[in-house]
Length: 68
Image (cartoon, rainbow, N blue to C red; front, side):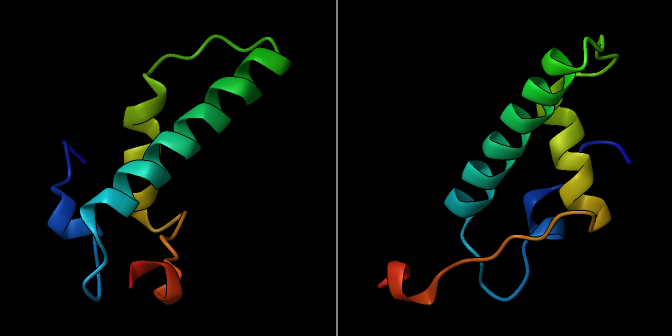
């Protein structure tokens, strides 16, 4: 999948900000896992994180109380 648009990933009025935060958090996890396991990454962690969200491997869960 080439650069999925945010609107393709977001569902049910989820915010772009929440998606960015979730992708950044997942990218950090990917980087940390690779470092701990001495794995060389072939693709950038952010791209891998976006692809995982687009494929449905990870889902964005927002807390409605925080949104206001």
